[in-house]
Length: 205
Image 1 (cartoon, rainbow, N blue to C red):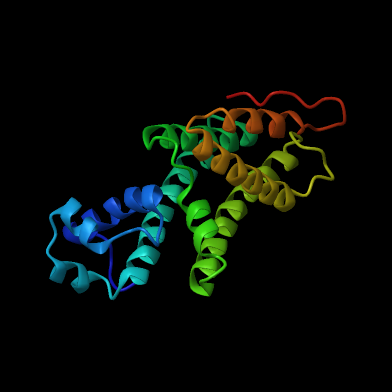
Image 2 (tube, rainbow, N blue to C red; image 1 turned 120 degrees about the horizontal axis):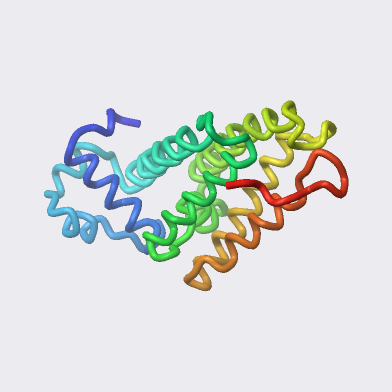
């Protein structure tokens, strides 16, 4: 990252970049369209970013700031049990998808588009998804230690599985333009969790 994101022009470009990359993807994102949408001179763009790739990578970093903020809000909530905290994170994510018109996950979208042609993006997107899974896994491990998951549960595996399932559901949500693939996936996932076989139940919200 070339500099902190708090410069107002840079922040405006990054925030617009999230919405435009969600809608158009990387290859169809035009720098001129971005500049027009944000009323930004071309020189200002190249003051903050070396090129389009640098811009998109910094948009991913900005997006991850929002993701980590949501993770902090949910996973550090002392008023909820760990499984409810994990579920709450995905419920808030669905609300964000709704506000954006069900455009899906930026990480998943860019990963689908660029992983086969850009090692830089493939590595960055995988790193971001792994970060999310790691944080979810820590909360699931807390649930296991509290007896809310079976003692033999592998928290890291369950977290990776949850992220993978959500990314697939987010893609279907974008294709369908609604939330219908998202909540049933969460319901199915959490209904399969429980301290003992046959005792799995809905996670309180």
